[in-house]
Length: 190
Image (cartoon, rainbow, N blue to C red):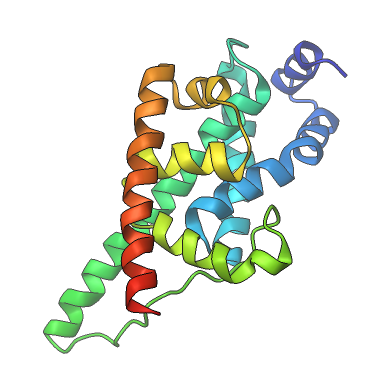
């Protein structure tokens, strides 16, 4: 089915079209979210939220971009929202701990094996994903879309709604930051 017809059916509330959308894009959405939130259960929950948001907002989709680009945007927004909520919760728990009100929260470690990573590279990828968490959001998104999801710079520009030069600059800074973080990690763990 072509995208225009699928969009029209989605906008008319056709449930079968929505099922088709989910089946066609569920792995892409899940992998994108997983690359950002790095927790399997959280990624599953956020991926569901992405499709709920898509269902609720499809009537406003103008078709200016491909469906995949639109879903990437929703997925990234939802994943980053989830990350912000986690950080807020950590700060609240820290304040509670200082005043002896709450329980000590354990540091969450990346709890996943990204489907795009080969099994023999699992340990190295876990280190890379942990380092990615320290990147500013826009660098992390650009790096994840290009290096983890395999999008081209042009596709990443569309998803991030920015210029190619901006994406190139984000990638350059992300690589520099990752080099420094990973150099420090390997120096301290050798």
